[in-house]
Image 1 (cartoon, rainbow, N blue to C red):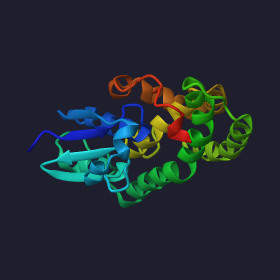
Image 2 (image 1 turned 180 degrees about the horizontal axis):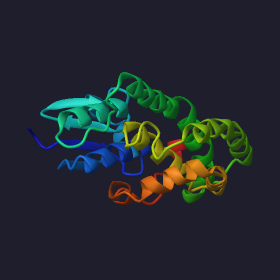
Image 3 (image 1 turned 180 degrees about the vertical axis):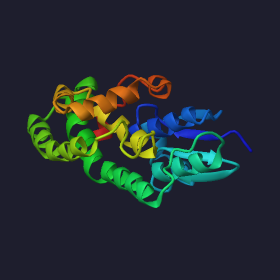
Length: 218
């Protein structure tokens, strides 16, 4: 098989999730950095018709959308499986991945990280009202996580795609003081994230906050 190529920017949480899985599976791959400007070029639509990242190219086949990419990698390459064996546990895994997209990411990133971390790093001023509303809105979501985390991982007794997919989002939120407080005030959530961040795959994918400019959030 051809060496897979991953397109994206390294700080993207979903790109990071794909890179974490590739490292966990010990897959030799090439990472092609994509800039915000690259997404505006019409030629990029041959990789992703909706102009987003990540995109994986393997054996001349293009796969886009992070959850699809994660499942493809896990099922296409040798090594440990990162999907549970039973139908119920697989359903739980998909459940938490859906929770990430639907309820966690829009607030953790769109309201807290972007306003408190990304915009100031790129020369802008945070909207305190958006941050305050985000902290209030996500608190109950994190309470659900706190209650569910009765073991080391989200599903079963080993790491799954659910952990790999959700953790980068919350780790980005944690860069904001409000995000750090939200996590540290929930001991199960704090322990879960701390445990994951000790894995080499997480350590190797830490990157600085990007300076793409304010047009990214305009």
